[in-house]
Image (cartoon, rainbow, N blue to C red; front, side, top):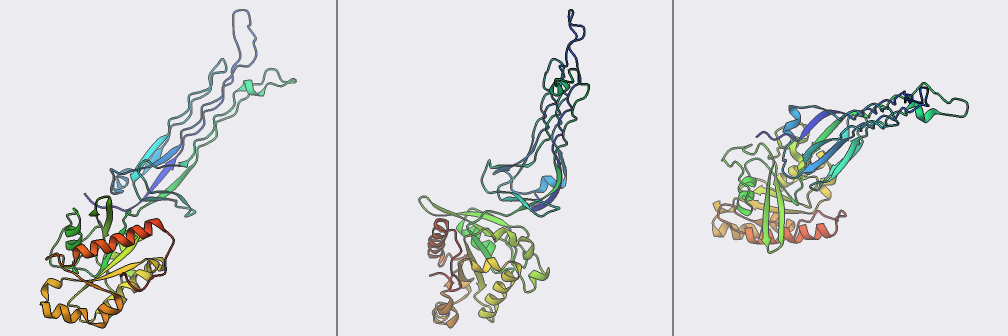
Length: 343
């Protein structure tokens, strides 16, 4: 199934039904008073988060959603039937904005959460509502009020605790496949990951957190190069960022600086998140090379961890470190001073 994380749809709430113009006509009351009922209210448009959905793909096939109109008022002061609401189900993590104004109407972060995004119009008053001392037989009624309508922009942002950030083919997909049950496509060439992957990591009894793997970044991503910039929205909600740098990189400092610069160009707020650095693919190094790397300024200054997703080297310690920071962030969601990596 294709992964679609943005969509534009048109919505229209139901119009209120018109009021009725009617007079009592009974056997012994041939010219009775007005008894026209009010029109029914129009149905509203509601968005609801559904944990069973993982993409906005359905909205590429259907782009117009309309609630029912209210019925006309009836005789004998009967109010018309109200129109049914329409419920639009979207994945958990969907942000709903009005396209024209850019205003956020809803940010649906939990299963079953609902928001009314267009209200139905009120039904019009029947002629019985217009009786006065000087007008005992009014012959007019209100039309129903039109329901609200607009274009909505839907944007899906995955809800993950940890966001994996790195260049293409640095081992992010292999890592998420080893520490969680996620099964992303893995191959030895760039841009294997074409869509975000989400995995649940079990750190112990009652200690679980989610990790999001997005397509690899390249220098100039914020200008549209590569694929990763299209999916950076999926790490905006994360508690912590995990930077992966290839242990065989010719310049570790440059690689890290490029990654952080691309994140900052997309959203400066991403640089406010706590972060951890891992040097990946350590299985290609000898024991002596790993010992020497542990003494390097890059590892010491950035408190970087040396790991291998293939051999499992350093993964239990990495999971434990991530859990500590995820737990702390959940308890204290306010931005913290960052920039020194994680212990």
